[in-house]
Image (cartoon, rainbow over all chains, first blue to last red; front, side, top):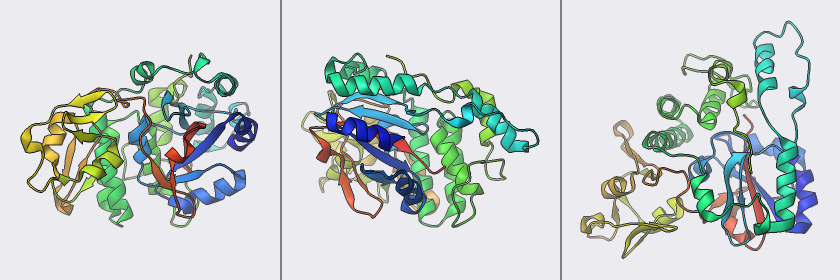
Length: 235
Length: 116
């Protein structure tokens, strides 16, 4: 997906930098990066610093940065290909997975618009209607009330303790981050997946109910509405 | 930032958060917040409590582990205080550090993803 786009846009002076927001580190990211045949920088953000630095609240999220190192689009949901799951018929009898697939189909993404916007920016740079002025970038960046800032600090303690091996304490801080910033899907999905993924195995995508957390993917998505899982990409 | 003491090294503050302490105060992009004299310790480090208060940064204590986390500034109410991209150095798959600023001169789409 991204590699294909990268091949197209690289001659026009665009580079893709992928950043894995994952406490699983290189081990979790490598199979995906290699399968994608990524020729662009593929970086590992175990500590989730970019969530805080750029305002990422879900994946995939992206920012656009111009040749002078100035952000021209603040953090936004970034889909370059429609997921086949959106179109598929959900078979009967799949239980919880089936219910999740029903919600996935309601998630909104508009890769056609997004890819067209990227191509327009690649071709026209600052003259593109999709490139925002610095003031607009700041004004349109996600709000950060004190509760969200505290969530980031709490999550940071959680990741620090997790990596130090103190999983029980880490969970306490992840829970705190979730309650302070409930719309932050990154904090939730990362924590849930750590809870339900057996050691050494690929990240669990079902993220069902556990004893450790109040929420889970299906119930939390239903609560907020799957159509609100990603915000629309607008001019 | 994870702290083991309530002091912050200036260079580390700049690298980790983009806030730079100058004579005018703590600055990030076009925003400068004046700091009182007691913001700087006798050794030249920054007092975390003063920074937290002036920049609206949460200072979360984990007493059990003797740690604090100094969170991002909420003084502007937005996740970006400036459109200037922050300094960013992250390892690649093999652990080699990659500096985002090495891409100056190119347009960059920085996309976050995850295995989960």
